[in-house]
Image (cartoon, rainbow, N blue to C red; front, top):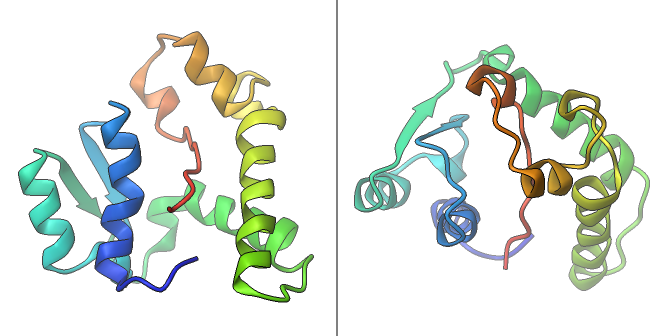
Length: 138
């Protein structure tokens, strides 16, 4: 929720977990403007990150993200009327904190994403591909 160009916004989203040492070896993204173009390509090359794009027109390639987007839309965006950009940012941040810190997820053994990460559970990489910790931009 900012006024940056899409490519710069995509890099900004990835930069925070990278600085915390939390990026996977491969990042799967859709073909949206935030993740296409030279800005992301340059960033990925500089930081030795592999970017994998889903097939155009195939949102099922990224089903867990589509599910997250539906949840975010239904629980946050569609439930609120934002009076200003500041109001929207505040509301989205409160939802993000609830999603990451207070809401247990069945796919994580009924832990919150923060609890799951804090426990540093070692398991099959295929079992953790859907781990989503939502980062605030800014």
